[in-house]
Length: 527
Image (tube, rainbow, N blue to C red; front, side, top):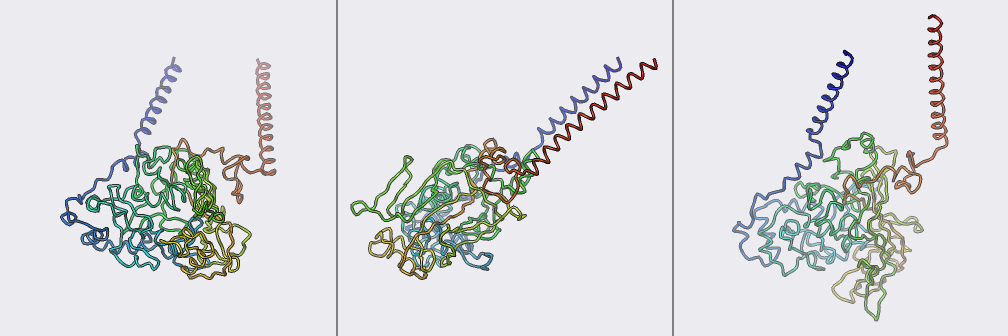
């Protein structure tokens, strides 16, 4: 009876402890709960600009609006004019080069190649007005385009090929009276259309991100957390956190998932241990270009074909341009599995005029640094854009062609479709030597994938990497990964460990059985 009462008492105690533990866990606020609570409090503007008398007068140009902004927000224009968003360049330390000034002003890429000589067209994504080939826009504070970042009417739009000027038909009074904290639409009008079209360049930034659903981006889900770009890309004195590694070389002013989620966000410790070498994006962005396709390859060598003397275009079944006379041939993909690279936050770049040492290989225009043995490195997902673009085989440098001009006969390729004159004029604008010969070379650019984060249940599964066949990390060969890699020595050690363990268990069990029988027989004899 005492045993029964004791057992019931133990059982009751176990139940009480279990209920207490479960109740305590459910009432604890997790980091994720705290973040959800924090970002569910939506921003409420503390100022109503429509009430200001200064903004009631008639504005005939965006420059007049800027001048009025500066009268109240004095000194802010100085912050803007020190930012790389305004200057299109900043000082960076590059290993082997020292401190150099790089940015859109002078760096080359393998999309539209570069801005030099093409400023009037490229400045559609500059936060200023009146940019020309001499860069005069950069010295006049009234050329700051406050509205492109702060318009909250979603009506503001830049005009094409006008040096950054907006459409003339806009209601500047209405826009000026409805400015505020930047929203996704402000950032997206430029960053979602980089490279000359929707999702062309980044792969993880498309017009789908204006109002994405949960499957496209769990953070920006318009019906969920609805985070805005500036929630992560925090701004201090108009300097915005987060860097593009097409233009940046140094490991500073970056944005990390861990800034909010910490480096141990998982309940399972085995997953937290992965964060030492695996970036969050690697598992939580299984694919990019989830909605709109992204451009994966660009062949400039086919550009310039005409039909009946006129430029033309071809499209795929999704409406993506597969050929444009002004730009050449393209390959598009959607729902793309990233490639993976080690990255320690630093990068090197091909700069204008750099000699190409080996023209038989693809030129990597922005090499991301890192390796398994580098304690600062993690595996990150990357979009690799591959192109064939013009270069000077005599001087062994990439050619910066002149692409845009208002009129025919000025040497611009998009008007005259002549590589020779476009190269002569473009290299002259860039103050680079040109031999007169034109060839084409393969190039690659690396674009780290940081957006279009999937819900946890759709993240990359263990077996997608830890497998011998088609592992996502098959190309990272500088380390041993269980499940993916094969070692006879390790396998032999494992097999013999199992065999010896089984033998040990069998031997131990046999001895115990033999001892028990012997003890029992001894007791019977004594009886």
